[in-house]
Length: 185
Image (cartoon, rainbow, N blue to C red):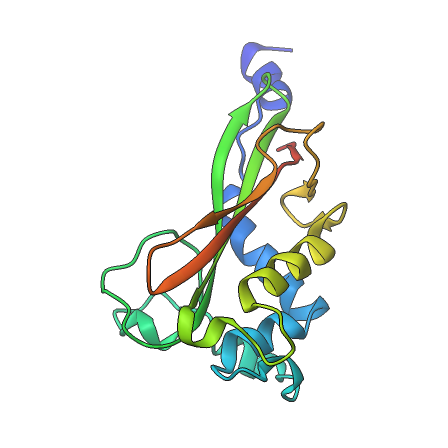
């Protein structure tokens, strides 16, 4: 076996990394209804609105075109070009960190940023959109396999970086939720 063959078998190239946010989003499309309702409807009773169709869910995802970003609710990055003035709730699904443990294994820290305008965050059932979405994401992803990621873990013993914490500036309240996993190429 020559050096190139050894490298092909022993080095993790994190080939799936660019697709991970989309893979997480598609898992969420297929396995959750409440998050999508809370993203779409800017009312205090969003939790009891009708479920969205698959096409309606997909229409909430920013397609990466030069259109105005504020017309969408789901993004695959942590930045935005424009100041958001619209009363809305948004979800950002991103690869936060890539940590190579050795040449074969590595950790990918997945981040979910949830932000909601103060005027739409508190719902008529006494909960907030930010907290409900955070809990629903933990329910959908914790201990579950995601294509290209592996099993996502929300556990301090797995990684001290796993946590949910407050974020955002007025008028957008938010939380950042971090999951860890082992990634093989």
